[in-house]
Amino acid sequence: MCRSFSFFSLPLVISFLLIISSVSTNRNASENHPDKNLFPSDMNPLELETLFKIMKSVSSDKNWRSSHPNPCNPGSSWLGIECKTGIDNHFHVTRLDFGTPPNPTCKNTATFPSEIFELPNLESIFIFQCFAHTQTAISFPKNKISISSLQQLSLRENSALIGSIPPQISSLKSLQILTLSQNMLTGLIPVELFSLNSLLHLDLSYNRLTGTIPVQISNLRSLLGLDLKLLVLQKLDFSSNSLTGSIPDSFQLLNSLIFLALSNNKLHGRFPRGLTGLQNLQYFIMDDNPMFIPLPLEFGHLRKLQELRLANSGYSGTIPPIYSQLTNLSALSLQNNRLTGKISTAFGNLSHIYHLNLSRNFLGGVVPFNSSFLKRLGRNLDLSSNPGLCLSPSEAFGVNVGIDVCGSNKTASSIRPLKNSESPFQCPKPIILTSFWVFLALHHILFSV
Image (tube, rainbow, N blue to C red; front, side, top):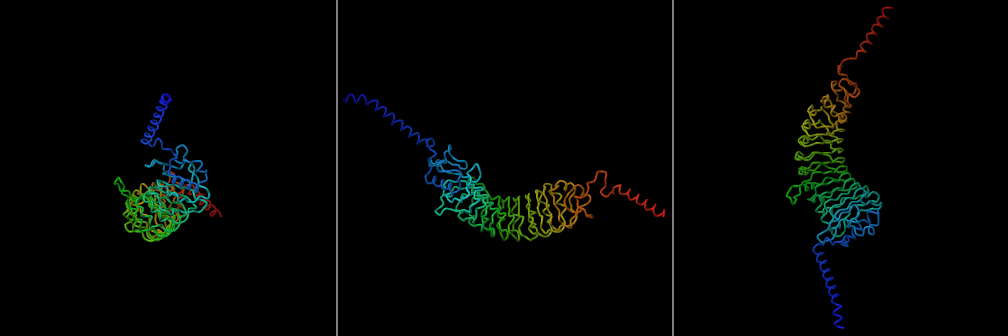
C-alpha cells in the first residue's frame, strides 16, 4: 500500500509544485508591474462614494452608480470625467465637466456639490450652464478640505448660482485659474481671495458684486515657479457688477497686466496714481461708469494700447492730443460723454485705427480727417450728435459720418458724390439754362404790355 501510494502521488506532487511555482511567478510579476494588474474598480472606496454623491446631486442623465460602477474604467467611463493612476496604484479623478452635452447635463434640481472639494486629486472643475432652475450657492464641506491639487475652477453662466464668493476659496492654494463669470453672485469680493499667490487668471465679470475693489489685489503680482520664470497676472475682468469707489492705487503694481475690464460698474473719481506704470496694457475697457472727470492724460503714455473704451461715463474737457501718439491704437470709443473742443489733426495719422466713435459729445470745429482716412474707416467712424462739429465740403463727398457739411444744413451722407469732371462748387448747367429762359419770358411779358 505504501509503495502504491508513493507511485501514484509523485505526479500529483509534481503538479502541485508546478502550480505553486506558477502562482508565485505571477505574483512576482504583478508586484514588479503593478499597472498590468490594476483593475479599474480599484478606486479608494471613500473617493468612489464621494463621486457618486456628486453625480446624484447634479445630474439625472442616468443612475450613475449602476451604469458606471467603475467610473475610471476606460471601457465604461463617461464623457466629462478624467482619471489618473496615483502612486498608491489607485485610480483618482482629476477632472470633471458638467452642463452641456456630451458632458453630463444638470437636472432642474441640481445644487452645488460641496463634495467636489473632497476629491483629493482633482485638478480641474468646469460647470457651465448647469444651475439654472434651483437656487444654489458655492459651498465648502464642513470638515477639513482635503483637496490640494485644484488648479482650475470655472463656474460660468449659471443663472441660479447666487450668494457670495466664499472666503474658503483661499484654501485652494494651487489655484491658477478662477472663472466665476455670468452668474448671480452678490456681496463683497473677499479679501482672502487675493492671498492666492498662484493665481494667474481671475474673471468675476457679469455678476452682482458690490463694494470697492480691495487694495489687496496687488498681492496677485507674481508667481515664482520651479523654472524660476516670473509669471504675473495678465487679465483682470470685473465688468458688469456694482462695484463702487475708485480704482485703488495698488493697480499700478500689476505692471504686466495686458487686459483690464471694469465696464458697467459704479466706479467714480480719479484714476490711480502711477497709471503710466502699466506699460504692458493693451486693452482698457471701462465703459458705463459715473466718472465725471476729465480724460486722464496718463493714457497717452501707455504706448502698447490697442483698445481704449471710455464711453458713457461723463468725461468732460477736451480729448487730450497726446492720445494721438498711441500708434498701436486700433479702437477708440469715447461716445456719450461731455467732451468739448476740437479734434486734434494728429488723430488722422493713426495708421492702425479701424474703429473711432466720438458721437454724442459737444465737440466743435472742422473734422481734421482727410478723405482717405474717412473712407478707410467707413462705417466704423461715428461723429454724429456733436452740434458744433462739421465736415469740410472738400472731404464730404462719398462719406457718411452723420454730421453737417460746414456752411450747409445738409449732412455729409446727403451730398451726392461728384463725378471726376465736376468741381465741388460748380452749379449744374441745367439750373443756369432754366434761369436764363425765365428771364426772357419775364422780359417779353413786361415789354409787350
